[in-house]
Image 1 (cartoon, helix red, strand yellow):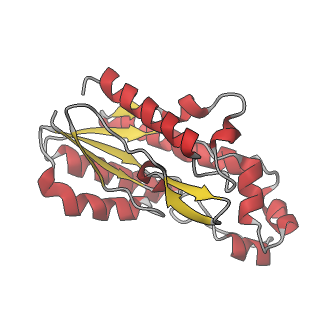
Image 2 (cartoon, rainbow, N blue to C red):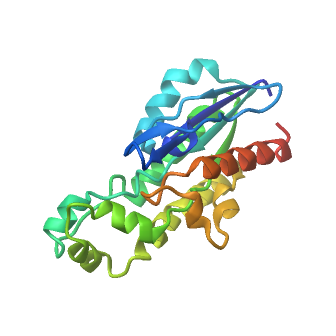
Length: 221
């Protein structure tokens, strides 16, 4: 293995929220694996549809000496919270519903496998529901969004469903699983997430990078 190609969203891009400056920025460290060329193609806001476009652009760089890491799903399961706030009794669909998400994820995996690349899928870093609920309801109706959700923890369960879909897809397609989620799901894990409840803090990113690098070594990269 000589090259690691990462296709992810803002989590593996290293995005964090600076509360003092009230804006997003990149964390200080980068994902590194000694002796390997790590190429991080991650993009803030990326969905599986964006991931397929990323892969197509880098496909000629992938081959038998490549480990392709896919970390997507967090944006796919998100909703238009302004629309839910305005019409809490209506039916609303997330950005990419479970069936097309799974279908496109399998397409991404098979596309990379055809190059001879080894593919690994990342479970989703968990969101912290209390923080995320406060974040998505800013300037909107907290009560209406809660009415639609039923309970705040539904936010966690829905994202967890997408993480399960990722793991199931990995098992069905012969991919390795890089289980970032389990490394976070400990008491007080919300402290590793920024005010928005979904982007890791600097310490959270360091935990992700250390976990990912350790998993890659265990995987024999």
